[in-house]
Length: 401
Image (cartoon, rainbow, N blue to C red; front, side, top):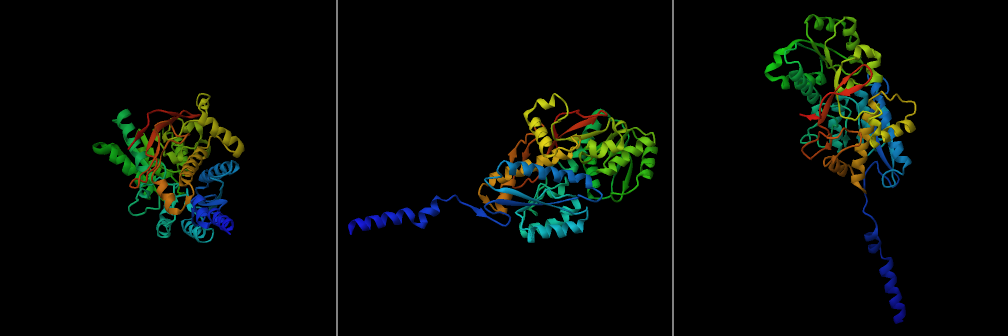
């Protein structure tokens, strides 16, 4: 009997539920997460007036495919659900609700457009669903006090405008400036940054012109700006509108020193349609390393990017900067998810996203992804670049606001 009791006690110790519970790794899961997958939602413009930017989402999908091919994140594959809004803000609202309530995603990632992200921001914050690394550089998305579930990614439009103003004051302090920008919050943010950095020199601005909508005709605006005799054009047009402005200025035989936003610098998407010769001399800004020259390709991070492009985007145009933009956003999300470990809750996603301090491999040295609970602007640094008719070349050091 004594022997039987000893065996019974030993069995209870070895196979008790308490002991099994302690030995299992802690796992806190939420909608969008299972033992085998993590659902990530995305809304992009695969069709519509800004369809060129769908390349960003395609790059992100390709990056996650690479991660899945390597075994995923802690054994979980990424299920990247990317939907087409057709560049329609109201459709983006519907799709956001579908992703959360029907698809049950863990978070929304890299959703496209300032207006669309503003339209879904309150809903996602009410539902406490992360709206992470938006495809918009508006400063309004750095507001953790009021919208703790929403976070941008790249330097703001305001920071871009300030950088251009500083360059002009250093290199062309007596130049007359002409401004072309959209009659919306994005256009006004570029101008606000420019004016802020110009300070008492804002009188250098001699002419401004605006346009409404992504399909406006800019002929009359460019003619008016040319008549101002300005030697510098701040072409704050985004995407295809920048293409139109570059082409029209050349047709008018007007050749000011011209600045364009980072969002418009893709050679394949925007400069080739404008004409490479007509685009020569343009100034913009960047955050990433170059990847076209033999010298840049000696960098291991650049080689990794090119190998990924060759394997996962074999038909892609290497001159489309939007691929590296998607690559970098996807890298940043991977850091967040890995830092979450097995605590894959929406709250922990935002906790990890708001405690980042990392240098992504394709960012130029000195540019970091850095956040705090009171600072939701992950990247704040940039450097100026100039197009030589073939490639973008750096013309300045890394700077920040």
